[in-house]
Image 1 (spheres, one colour):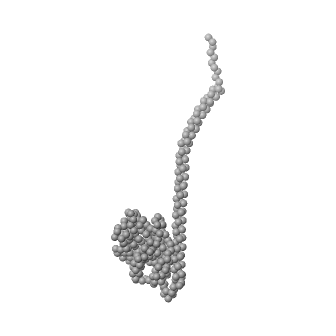
Image 2: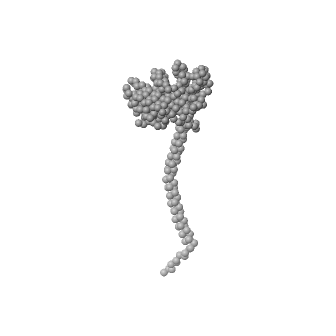
Length: 333
């Protein structure tokens, strides 16, 4: 029987084989780790793309909003500049008239006049007869979608004399205010009454009747870093016609400084006409800046009070703001 030879062990070769097996296991583990990382990367890529897309959309929206705000502010600034130019025209016109005058204007002789409201009543009835010549000369077709107030200068007649006025106008559509023939728009009229019964200014005298309201009050307002007291005399009367309602008002706003003889006369027209499911309101107001004469023998020297333009700005801005807020309140009811 032949002798069986036992193979000799080769430690070096066995060690190499063991290391090779270990390397294969390590390579397999690395491949699995690589595949896992690739899988995570591929899964995260769409999320990153989506996040990047959302970020771009957000930045675009922010830029769009900033551009819209910038445009709105620029339009407001242009409107204020236009008001200043128009106001300068009116003041210059008043100065040119004052230089050639030998006596005070009729309206300038009524400081502390107890008959001021009687004058208002007369002016209101005269103004009512002028409604069509004032309101119908405005091209309201261009104002239908007007978002802001329009301000311009206009030549007007008073007591047979021509004068330059600062005119502001706007048109509102009120779908929540029904117009009843023979009664007009009672809803918005009641809102006017409530306005004078509010507490945001100090009322000295208030007379409310079915178709008219008269008030004397004063209030404080801040302008250019200083508080200014103003005194206001106001009267409004409504005239209900067959197919429209006309409201005429007169007011006078005086600065509270005893050394400031500036005041602003305001005459206003408002027409309310029915439309489907509501009414359309057209408003036009004339502002005339003036100064009181203290000596009828001495004509005005043409020096306008330094606060006159501030007072006109207050009257114009407060009137526009309060009427706009009232219209918004009506729309929300």
